[in-house]
Image (cartoon, rainbow, N blue to C red; front, side, top):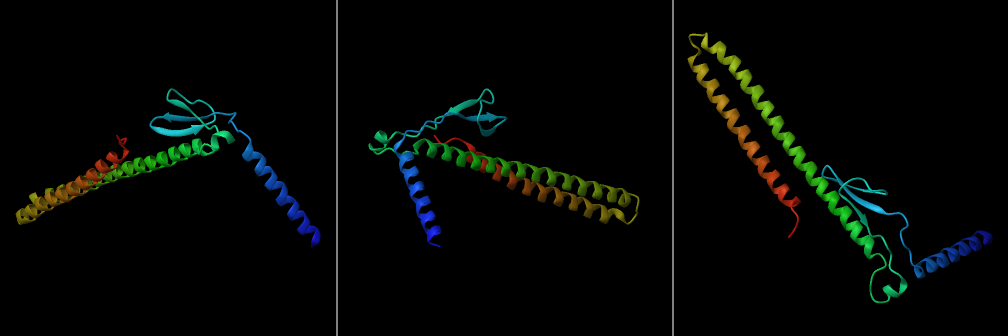
Length: 170
């Protein structure tokens, strides 16, 4: 048990010494990290990846610069903020895509319901007592169209609000 305690203390000293040594040295990133935008999607890569590629500055400040009040991780903060912002923007784009798909689903459902009602209208026309039934089918088609249009308008409004969130702050 005493040996385990001694080993733990020794390991702790080595880690402390290593951390102190690292904090006194200047670290430059040897491999670049590139901010890439392809088809409206932002990625980060270890190599350039297209026309809209920007190399990220990952240098860590030297101790002399830290003493002037600058953070050793200032460059990393910017990268982390960029990643968080891009994830948020990607989430908003997914929400917009999902709402557009909802609109398409609503339109398909509306078209199917109206087609079914139109089939019923054909039967109503061939029936002498079908005039009242025909009129009720027309009213039901109008109601289906209006309710679907209200839902589509609401979704388009939500899409517009989301698209405004994607606009850069000026």
